[in-house]
Length: 414
Image 1: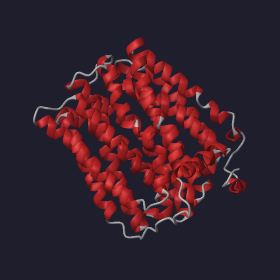
Image 2: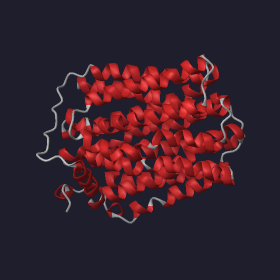
Image 3: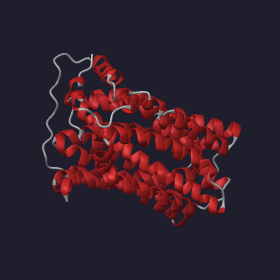
């Protein structure tokens, strides 16, 4: 069983899988609810993703400094319970016939705040639970959850929307968060509260995280590449469901099935990333993954009815592989080069810069889709994602094979 023989990591892994499954069901069901039931426009659909991700701009940096001061596990449990209540309100409102876009915007905005706290705490918790040599296999297992949830959530989400309704599917999302909280509460390993600094200064602590990331020769190009990628990935995501429904004329079940086939690459990637890292080197693998992701998004607008649907499946397959490989290795790189007392702040800084691009990208996608059309927006997003790999190409990653041991001397860059 490897890392899963660690009983408390196994509980964390199960909780993460349940939480990811719930989130993926919602990711498929919410835009379909807006398009098919509430007759939302392209721009209104893009605002859903903007509301969900704007919390990174509001809370991202503060969350990192806060998590470095407290135990992570109670934050994870509380965030899951809060999201269960919020998403549970959607099927209740639908049952009473009072559901509208304003409620979706409010639910997504509030759940976004909880997601920020959850994600920062979740990223900082494994180093408190595992030994350093367990981090890479642990991160690979957690990334496998992203993969499985993406595949199952995409396929099941589309089928469930067509079978039960979008609102009922979102209710299953709420149950996933509730189950996740149950498993997190069952973790037994005591988590030590981080030592409090003698003189607390939130602004200074946040600045330390920012300085560390942007002065580090590897973390800086990583975070800038990720931010560029996520900016234009969000632009793509803002319009892709509308594109598949209104231009390709696919049903929810078909969209889910095609997405599921493509996302099988994510499951494959989570199983071979460790071997790929040993074979070509972790630095080189991260560079290739970024370039591959840009190519994948550039292929997606070739999608058309009939056999040309294979462009959507193939591009989704390649994108899923590259996202998972890049995610596992980037998290492991950050956890290795970052000192324990800065884990939360460095994680939050990288998330703030990269995830903070999502609401901007969603608005950009909605605006471009309204002004130029859905397919041209996909072309623009793909080309810009590929161009964004320049941050890594013109960095030490271009010449490195692996993250060298001497980088440990840069744990506290000046």
